[in-house]
Amino acid sequence: MTIDASHTADRIRLGMVGGGQGAFIGAVHRIAARIDDQFTLVAGALSSDPARAAASAAEIGIPSDRSYASYAEMARAEAARPHGIEAVSIVTPNHMHAPVARAFLAAGIHVICDKPMTLTVPEAEALVDLVAKTGKVFVLTHNYTGYPMIRQARAMVAAGELGEIRLVQAEYPQDWLTEPAERTGSKQAEWRTDPARSGAGGAIGDIGTHAYNLAAFVSGLETEALLAQLTSFVPGRPLDDDVQILLRYRGGARGMLWASQVAVGCENGLKLRVYGTKGGLEWTQADPNYLWFTRFGGPKQLLTRGGAGAWPQAGRVTRVPGGHPEGYLEGFATIYAEAARAIRAARTGQPPDAEVIYPTVQDGLDGMRFIAAAVASSQAGNVWTSLA
Image (cartoon, rainbow, N blue to C red):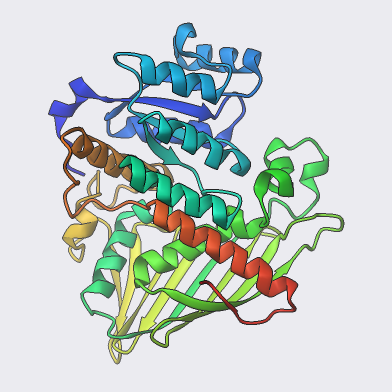
């Protein structure tokens, strides 16, 4: 990835809400923001517990006078500072995404938000309106769209290398909720299986939205309707831990999506396959530097990140030579790098270059409509349900 070193002396001032001690995703966001040296973390409301927030801030070098007891206080104070934060990362449980985003957008601060974007579709629709009204950059961290070979897959589909798309298969199995971890002290399991904090979806919101977004990102297709079966295999668990969905795309293509957190032996088995009239693509996160491409009637080809078959769209977000593996953190960092480009453009009142790609507030709304339709379909007895 080409990084303009002149920007490192003028890094984007970043704040964070959530992500305190023991929080996995907060640390991931902080690493991702640092990889390309475009952000400086200067403020935070890292926990709803003031003492924990202060201790967390001290651990990662946030000054005590910029460690806040609440996100509302942080938004007000940073907006009033002559050199307050320009952007905020929201890495809280799902139920806090919308209120925190609203507070910072209203304060004139750009937002980088974890997914799913909100708890409900109406909240998401209101957020779309607020982003349009404020004109601020809103980036949703569907981080898997940052992988170089995913960027190449998208470009190949758009260029017609696969012909007319017929089939899309996406899956994301895990096994970490095979047993009731939410009842044995796991904070990550507790909020993800709690409807008040996670929303109407369990596995579908946590990882199903990633698979769904990735399928749309690469294929360019829009979902017309779906038929879903959401299951809670662990007795007493109020939210789904396994999701099986048929997808009907506008234009006639068909798809299938499977997401599970009770698939024993699976870690983070994200995989995408796209098939058209002329060829097919296969990609798996376990080997993210590889993309398999097959033309109908021809041999299977292995395309590699940084290799002879890499397209410019992959090269643009490639950091090291082929053969040196890039992975999850670098893919996440690409989202932050794209956010940096968009925020720098916003400083001048201009849109970012056309090549800058990141998941937007509209992607967040699409994800919420996907969850709502899947839940409705499953509750109605597995019937076809529109995403309108």
